[in-house]
Image 1 (spheres, rainbow, N blue to C red):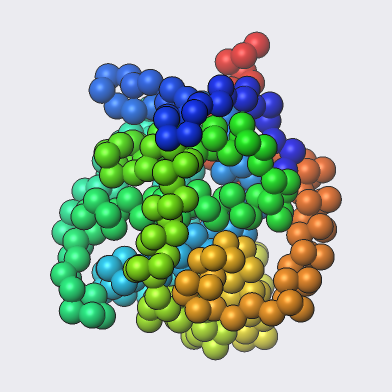
Image 2: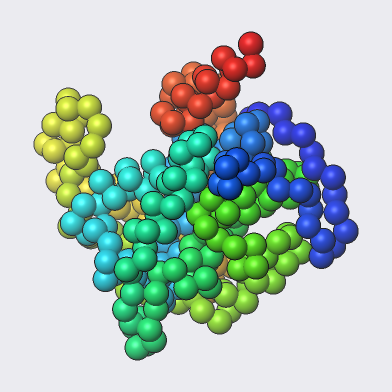
Length: 308
């Protein structure tokens, strides 16, 4: 990905924090990741949309999180609205300025009453630190893997910067530092341990990958587009679901894919890599209004004005 210029962080010894958190606090609230950082460059790029289903599926592969979504989410009755709201929330964490912390507090309040029992009969609460942190943690390995395919692999400095910025986003969401690995060296063993001991093909995972799901036609976007999709949706629904399942499994890190038990063939991998080459060639030359999502585009424009 043609990322904005990132100042490489100083490399730290193994087991030590890689750098000072990229932003401080204002009025007691954690600030978003910095303008011009790695997340600033990649989270608003349209390629991030292709990676989101993999991150969501990895989240709900945890039995507690899958049960919470199964029991409390409107992803079945309002899939497009839920997707739009989730995407806006994610963009606010990074491009929302002073509104980022407010959005983090709103999400914690929203999850305060979400509790129940998972498929194994174990009690869960959405704000249990291990569960809430896992939801956030999944984004990092998915970005790490997806950028290597759809853009270009991160340098060591960018990888460390991305993780430091991801920790900062966690602070916006109210995740305490003690509940997230604080270095790259600590993250990967934690991640592999959750994959080995917790992750499974939950009912929600299977539903998200179902290519015959009774998914309604999109109800967001310009009216002419919505009307056209409503007419064409009977023919488009199944190809769309197949494409979503393909991207979900293909852009999931291979070790996570294996932990969940998802099939992926060599032929599929070749198709994915051919498609990724097209994406890498086309997206960087798109005009900004097509390449970046609306909140990211507005934030970039505001940052340019402030720099004049």
